Picture 1 (tube, rainbow, N blue to C red):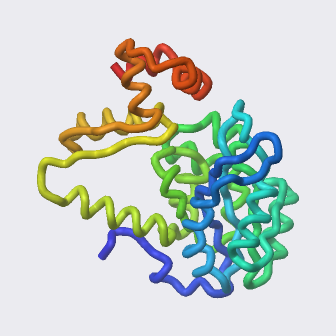
Picture 2: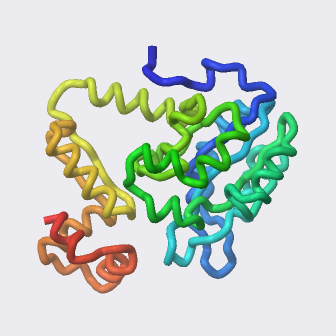
Length: 264
């Protein structure tokens, strides 16, 4: 028993399936061209496994205020290339346009709905409990159209947002292939011998600070090593001079006095 449902537990052929993925990708702000499709490729196992279902995909790109906060039309084109089948882009998430497109889906169809973070509930209610998320318009409007909900957005799974947790009690909820692999891998790591060392890196230093705090305070890890922008944030918090490019990056990507205090 894995403790959660996987795609292998159900026959989803012909079923309407709502899939949340994380295909947030680096984008050229001038041309809109996707520069790295790694996350899209990681979603392929799940999407290909649902080849005989009626699939609507929810995803986000960046966040409000960023230069790469864009509609998902280009993502649909690239997913079409990777899947070798048409992925129709719908510039709506839960309104009448999206609901009509979903209701007309046939077996084998794939839709990509609009950037979830274009909608206030996804952003403004971040961190609110499940009881709040499941009452959002996003969840209430989309739930009746689907038989199952699949979460394959592992990279965003730490966030309490409507499209990530709001469907958990509204629809039978399943871990996608990527989510399944990551959970199994993490479980093995957390059940291993001590000492445990976690490595955090990347550009989202605000999230990493909270993750590091949680790991250390709850005994999940004995030590946390940092790299990339996360490491720079911790160095910056101690007064280290990083040079203008690195310090500008931190300031442009959400560094604030409160974050500096947390890092200390």
